[in-house]
Amino acid sequence: MTPDIRVTIAGTEFVNPIWTASGCCGYGEELANVFPLSKLGALVTKSITQKPRMGHRPPRTAETASGMLNAIGLANVGIDAFISDKIPWLEQQPTKIIVNVAGSSIQEYVNVSARLADSPRVDMIELNISCPNVDKGGIEFGVDPVMTEKCVSEVRRVFKRPIIAKLGPNVTDITQIAKAAEAGGADALAIMNSAFGTSVNIDTWRPRLTNNRGGLTGPAIKPMALLMVDVVYRSGVKLPIIGIGGIATWQDVVEFMLFGATAVQVGTQLFVEPDAPVKIAAGLKAYMKTKKLATVADLVGKVQRW
Amino acid sequence: MIRPSCEETVLLRHRDLKHNYYSLTFGPYSRAKECRPGSFIHVHLPHTDVYFRRAMSVAAIDPKKKEIEIIFKIFGRGTTLLSKFAKDAKLDILGPLGAPFALPTKTERVVIVAGGVGFPPLMFLATDLVQRGYDPKKIEFFYGGRSDGDIVERARIKKLGVNFHVTTDDGSLGEKGFVTRSVESFIKAHGSEKLRLYGCGPDAMLKATNDLGLKYELPGQLSLEAPMPCGIGVCLGCVVKTTRGDYVRVCVEGPVFNIGEVEL
Image 1 (cartoon, rainbow over the protein chains, first blue to last red):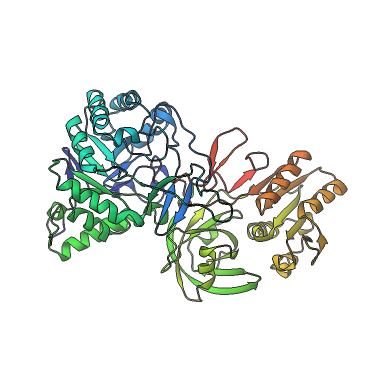
Image 2 (image 1 turned 90 degrees about the vertical axis):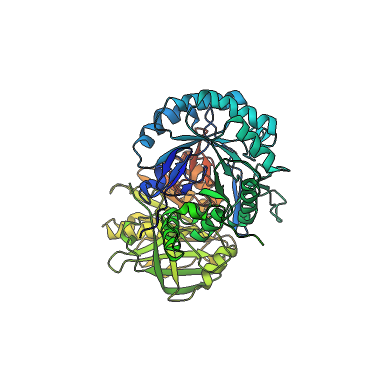
């Protein structure tokens, strides 16, 4: 029996639970040169804002122990160019398309989402209310339950297909934010965004990012992300969780699912291994066969606590 | 459109070129013949604590044997670890990557400006041109370094039959002074007609070469280096500002840029 790794989230069926993480796969074109996108559960685009953004001055990335710091600064083409130049190509791709939306005001989230609502091939949107890298990159919404609920509910009015709220770890209690997103009408939660961090060059005494601080990603943050998924899964929030944070192997995916993730996103590992999603999906299938699991849903939340 | 792929290769030859320079040859690598002068590969360092790959410009290829050579100098942890891999080690290569050098026309005289560890893609370029039947006497290969230890693979470059000019900052080999000063003397003596510049080296040398190109209105290209998490254009970490004011990716739009195209 071939294990079934399809998953369904908010009524949408995905061929597998392995998606790309926003900011780590551009708008998909480069990855499509490496492997057929039909192998992906979904492609999550780079954050789109209303106006094009150049991003921060380099250096924008710094390698760290088992990970990286980044402060790209939400560099993106803006919603107009996204719709005219990127959507036509994305519409042809044999995978689910999830567009990540960022903004510096609730109105910006609403405006961008309304434009995306006109593109039927955009299967879902993911609200980036937790980008740590720009003064107004949404984090002020994602750290405040009231603002989170307002942001999600206002977008809900203009975008009728599923909405994912992407939450970050840089908060006192992520369950409060998760509940707010649920109350605002989100259909799923993506947990988690990058963690605040920084590093300094000891020769020049300059921070290694011109932004002076950035977001930490990669395997270094996996244990933090697992705990965030775990606490939200057990908080009474009913929404499906998409786990993110340092996923590099199929074993990592199994861990996230055991703690309650229905699907996952692979981010920084794409830089090391651009075809990682293909290998991870194959590994997950083999694991399920060994464990005699019929569907991948049989793993979700099945951690056996001490 | 080149489609990069990941491929495990074997370290066939490991040469210590002294003064912290190393040459590693990998094979069989099925994409070897698709690597052009200016192309780079992204090398994974297995079983080490270094997370990202390391971008390495291609120094030479042997299309028949499907071999690829890189030459690098130890700068940090990644290059230190890379230098320690022994013959028969298996390393994963992501490639081929980057936009290669544009070739000169037959009537142009090629002026190569190599600074220290920037010489490998330029040695590849000179080798490729000679193999294509380009007259080696129309290639001026300027190679500068801090001292004689930084001028590696001399015999190999000379053997191409190119006009070889060496400079060192301390005068321990060749002419004393910066390589770009030597290049400028040549341009003045020769005249700027039908010259094409190719440069790769430290930032200050690239900037000086770019300035020479603008001053004497010479066409040409420079190969840049930047910290490169992904190498395939998705992370936007390696960007450089163009003179138009926008950012471009060193890994995809580069690493080779036209003179005057980017801010240095």
